[in-house]
Amino acid sequence: MSDTYARTTTSAWRNWAGNVTARPARAVTPASVDELSEVLRRASEDGLRVKPIGTGHSFTAAAATDGVLIRPDLLTGIRDIDRTTMTVTVEAGTPLKRLNLALAREGLSLTNMGDIMEQTAAGAASTGTHGTGRDSASISAQIRALELVTADGTVLRCSEAENPDVFAVARLGLGALGVISAITFAMEPVFLLTAREEPMTFDRVTSEFDRLFTENEHFEFYWFPHTGNCTTKRNNRSAGPAAPPGRVGAWVDDELLANGVFQVACSLGRAVPATIPSIARLSSRALSARTYTDIPYKVFTSPRRVRFMEMEYALPRESAVEALREVRAMIDRSPLRIGFPVEVRTAPADDIPLSTASGRESAYIAVHLYRGTPYQAYFTAVERIMTAHGGRPHWGKIHTRDAAYLAGVYPRFGEFTTVRDRLDPDRLFGNDYLRRVLGD
Image (cartoon, rainbow, N blue to C red; front, side, top):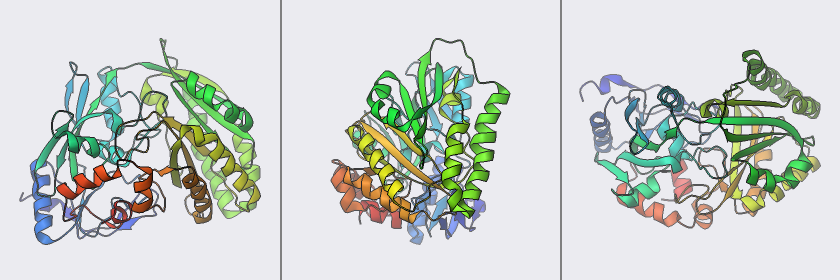
């Protein structure tokens, strides 16, 4: 323990979007599970609350603390690859990018993933990171076991067979139950996906949404406000051969247009909002249709260099089209100028109490605005529509819901809080965000 606090700092912490800052009493970088346990015991003795952080890609203050901030930089790497059970166990601070690259080298892959891979394994799981999928679910739903260090420094191993009540809730735990030190994910032999991206009108994609969802393993689309235009993406397993996008074409689409030109367009729109509808019409026509085949992480994920603010809600899948049409009508009759596309994805039902897809097939509607643009009026209006449809906010993205509302849309909410009361009765892992969304 003597060298753990040699890796202690007191500098301020800021999240990726820049909207959340914290000034912890100390920030600690433990290098082992034993050191992590001692950090928790010491914090409890000192009367300081504790929060682990990942890479700060959440837009909420879920990781903010004025106590002890635990950085995961030294708790990284793969502990074990088990080809018999087809699982991989990783240290909690391992970035998903590093995990994906390592698995690919071994001829292995996760089944599904979100659209970026900068987050840590524990951070992504703890906030409910998801991609889109008809049959395959979120990062949390792919967890087969986890190791959790609780408030008194106990190392608790959890799976369906060991501490199953904790395992049931801790796969998506918001950092409220303890500090995850390792996660075991299901994996499978690496496979190929064929991605088909093409423009489609708003009217067509909404009228054919059920068919597009049913016919494709992974379907998502983006609608450009102030236009009737969308871009769609269909990912399906393929026998190959691999046919990745050409280097120049990929750079043009993924870097020049999706990041470089889009950054300029966002900056112009923020400075001169009246230009946004015209920019939206141009942007919605800029990305051409393309089809390519590659390994999963190269299809599911893409670089996101333009920084933004985001709110996302999960709705019953059957409510998604109606809610999206209501969002469009709201924007059309308002003075709002929205320069970011609205994203729609899906997920199958899962059995995790605080998963946004818990117990129901879900569709996600995500709204964004360029960082530095006032977002409250837009997000408030969208949130009103989402909650009218029984929406569940993404735990890591901006929302205003509290425990009273959330208990009403999560039938197993009490199951989570019961385990929390047992594992952390003194709220060592509490903060203002958790007090709002989970209650005291």
